[in-house]
Amino acid sequence: MSRLSQKQPSICTAVPLTDPDVSQKLALLRQVLTSCFGPWGRLKQVHNNVGGGIMTTSTSSVLLKAIQVSHPLLKLLVASILNHTSRFGDGGLFAGILSLCLLENALRLGVDQAVAVGVYNRLLGLCDAYLVRDDCGCKIRVDFSSTQTLLTLAHGLLASKPACALTPAEVKHVALQVTRAFLLTVPCGTRGRDRLGAAVVVPVEGQPPWASAALGGLLVDMPESLHPADLELQGGTLIRLALFSVSLAGDLPEAGDGPLELHGETCLEEAVLEQLLRLADQLVSDGVQLLACQKVVHPVLQHYLRVRGVIVVERLGLAIMEPLVQMTDAQPLATFQAPVPGVSYGQLGGLSLHQCGSRAMLHLLPAGEPATCTLVLCHRNQTALAELKVSCERAGQVLRLMLKEPFALLGGGCTETHLAAFVRHESSSDVTEAVRELGCSRHDYMRVVGAFCHSLESVARALGQDGGVTLTDLCHAHCWGIPAAPPADVPWVELVRSCGCGLMSGHSGLEWNLIGTEYPSFSPALNLGTESLPCVLDSFFAKANALHVAVESANLILDLKYVIQDRN
Image (cartoon, rainbow, N blue to C red; front, top):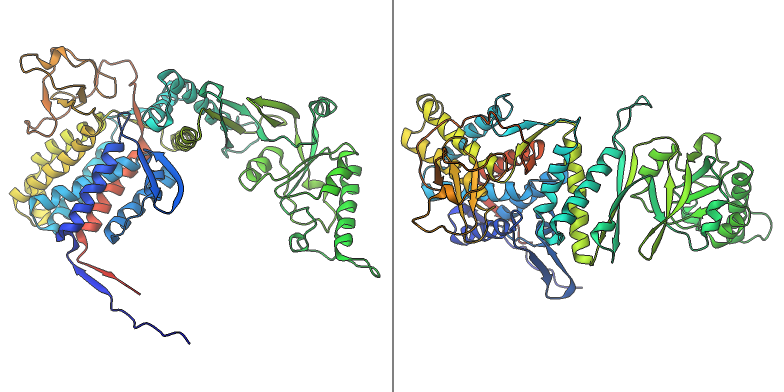
């Protein structure tokens, strides 16, 4: 009998944020996330000492899943960011950087942590109230009569991911295909339902990004026994489809519900095969022209159906089942031991061959106009293709969210600097009421307000190039960047060209200030008289929630008094 080890006592750490080791780990995570941010972000390579593949990325959802954090505070923050990105698709780096800046600035002030939490919550409510106002200066309404805003959103998401390794022209092309795929999933309203369709991403390695395309219908791997001439025999009529979610390989555990009769000395495998062939006879008599199976189809059954003119497609996988059900109105069959009801069959509009480089795929065409499509993504190597696939899936998720909230926020750091100026101005006008509600001193309140605004501005500054200078104008509070530190005798007006979002251009009527330095409080003016659309936009829904995640995660960590770890 093996010896039982003695149970170890739990480790209790009081006020964990005062631990220098914890502060160092928080600062290191902030540096990692900040260096990934924006189009000038640096790539990260993650690998382990025991082998395995090397992953290259700058996307928060991929990076944070790959790295291992040990401290409970870091685990809490990482879990909050990953939960946000899984639901909203964008804003993970923004949430992480802002939350860590809020933590570091609150600790640097030396004020009571309960005071910092109260002020942060109040300022978060102030931001929420401003963002929903009609006269919000950092928000624009999305015009669905034009695709320009959709393209701008998709373009911004792809351009901010350097690991995608796309040229500007390729970014524009892929963004167009992502937007087209999104529009193909929006129903036309002819079927009396408002359910969005599905977009299935098919990655193809070895082809240039220019070969990427959005296609109506679904693409599946071409069966080896199927030839292009077989597709021409299908004609232009509707194709009847039988869809199985159960394995048709003849394995008894996969047989599903239903009786299986054995006569005399008949072996089990022969009885199952006979059942499969009886199923095939029914499918042929019912006029089925295509059998699609999520799993494996028995070779004898495949040959039996093939010689009778039925095309067999196997190993579809779980991911494509729901889009295929939605496109064909077929009901997935979970057993082969019972007769197939006539209402279970679906319909396809046709079949065709789609060639992408050396890869041949079977194109399942929809009958009518159901909102289902395939986004074929191509790239030259596996690493860039993996990052492109994640980025395009996130972009599609963001575009879907716009149907919920038809607004977008200014990108390029302009929303962060605008919100910082607004919070600084509004907070200075209601200090007496805020101090009375929070029970703190006026001095501490204004210091925490400054920490909140500096944290927002730190996110905007993270978007700049290495060695560059980041400014904010003292009229509209937009973010302006200069690639390199300017000479002392050259005025900034001669160096700035346009703000981060591209809505405004530099002119002599503006006055600038370095981000991170003090400037007089002012109310940001609205962008009146600018008819052009911004060049860089962020998702309103995703960024507003990321703001909540950042502030609430920072407050939760600031509120922690003890961390108890079980070592057993």
